[in-house]
Image (cartoon, rainbow, N blue to C red; front, side, top):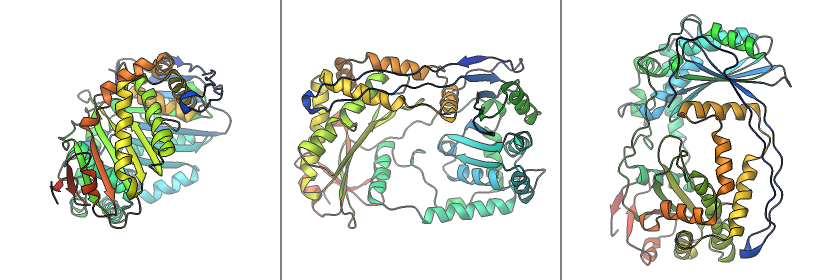
Length: 486
């Protein structure tokens, strides 16, 4: 959640300069426990960023980059489908399209497009589950004029009826073209089992509900979330920081903050399915998909978050145990994957998966569960931890682009994390011990509490899985059991 703003002050330069240090290091060359040796980490450096707060509560992050004569601007708001009404899912998606394509109260859509073309500028709007983004890219010499159009779109959208109807038609068309790929369908079904039927995290619009959306719904959505004190702006490219701050302040002049607004908290999760094995039959599926999931009381602010990052690597990383043992030594899977996720502001989930043949489905399931138990029962080797640490640090060590830096700082600002949070996590990862990983495994890996979803094309899979535990059966388009003994 955003930190409180001091609305009585104007913008001040500089407010905060953030220098992100590079990462260097040398990995262990040991190869015991069948873990491959590692290579040295590459060096990395990043430029400075500037944080500025305007008098209306809008927060800016700016990074000058004079390599090309282009300026990129992105506005981030806390808004999304999580806060739609149950009766009208899809409002966020339709709002995003009409914001972009519908013109403003002063500029019809066709005139707006011509002006953007004249300025060689591109503008886009998207609204996801919990974040809205509006982006602008323009040459340095036309960015001032293009920025005024960008601000007009955010502040004064027209939401014309014809554009609303066009966006609804597009949304209904997208519903009809959703992919039915087996793995993607399995992931959606697992989400339904974990979050609970009807949860906003898994709620999807249908054509009838899309059709019920009106212009008033879009206006209400815009009025609920589009306030300057809910906007974080990132800018990178060819500009002078002082001049750019004045330019932005001028473009958004007259947009007053809402003193009653505070970013909404994420909705609570629903009541998920009971732990156990769930099976659904997909006749056209060539492979069997096994997914393991459970919710975990973990956020990125948790003290043991760095240890869970290495737990991820040890279990599911490219040189982790699932890859080496389940797929490699035991040859029980064509593919393995997994992630112990942690959000900034709400609990995460353990997701682990295996793609395998029908002849290996029982043994593959047992093998994944065994590896989780083993991490709970015994410390991973020092070599495993060093390899996991090296692999994770490598993923953070590539030279960063200005856009990546800006995006990260905007995210930290939105959730109230310190600007050096990334560095704190890196320092924490460097201190993680084998015992820390085992303690994290005991905290977050609970094989007895897992929801195991098996999606396959071969009949009779469920009866074979009963050797592991009770099996419930699902229809392929549902995330609720049909019966316990179908």
